[in-house]
Image (cartoon, rainbow over all chains, first blue to last red; front, side, top):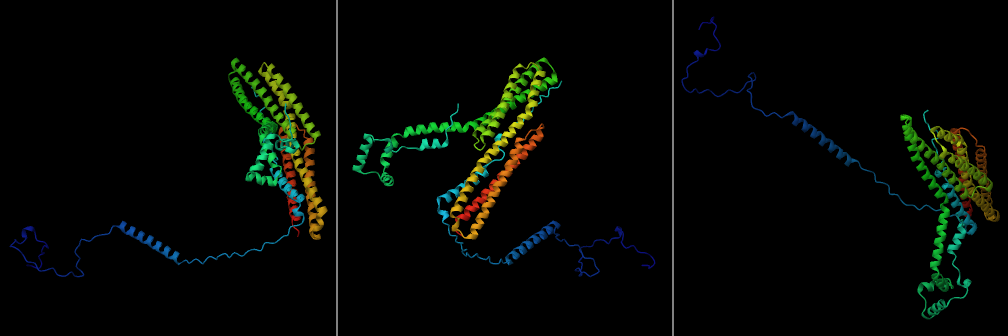
Length: 139
Length: 330
């Protein structure tokens, strides 16, 4: 073939060689770096699954941290109140206290205090009536 | 006609079981029971009571026989007491009822008046006149019921001195007379103009009526306070008497404190009295021609009554402290 004559890269269909029977091709050579990799069927994970997983991890993590922190907080033992009896001051009664005149006075004071408290400055039953007096007929 | 029975007499009559020895000879049945009890013994309860009071068996038998009579007398007296007690309460109920009726009549009057003002027909005029007359009569009735309530309250108030009470009752009587004479004019009303004239008579007198009412209300409050202050004075006197006769049992420094406290209690009483005097003076001089001003003065006096009550309350509280100081030796 002449070097100057351009040769088409692909032969026309009419120039295909005739089929003479089965052809045994050599086994495929291992892929090289420059050679583009053949497209293989791979399983892709949907993004919503990823998001759910991340959120789940976050929730689980936060729960774990919270639980561990709570367990770590050690409350100091509450101080147990110790009952110490307060000494009651002893006031001796006077000789007057047992006398009937004093006891009557004491009772009467309590009674008067109650009566004054019960005294109502504005007796609601005695609120004077408020009446609309002018008849208001138009002339 | 109302009968007044003092509570003391009521209690005495209701609870006074006569002693058999005071009545005289015992009847044969009582003697028979007594002999039977002597023979067969008494019940445990009767034995116990007999130990406490040897005259119990005879008194018990006698009282049991007359128990129905006592019950009857007690019921009669209690019903009388209830009647007496209910005089002001009854007057208040009557006043409330009259006021309710007045509200209804006033509402009817307004409907009839609006109808007349709108249509100016003879029929609406007649209806309006009729409703106006009914309302005017009921208005007088309400005021009269209120004055009667005040009169009952005055009658029951034990703190007012007789002169003041008499003055207030005269005021009330004058107002009731005015209302009576005013009520007599209403049946003669023959036109809307007449109705307005009759209504104006009450309107011109209304401020005087309201002044009298408010004076009496303040007077009643002063009367109630006077009862409390009289008790206060009695207690203070009793405390002073105890201190005077037996104050020497206390150490001198405590006695000095007690005497100082007594002075402070007396001071509270003086402050109370000053306030009462102010209120009394203002109440006597209550003559105003403006209803709003009257209301303002009335509120002011009511407030002063509250202050007087406060002085009395503080003094009583001091009295309690004084009694507590007297109770203990140191």
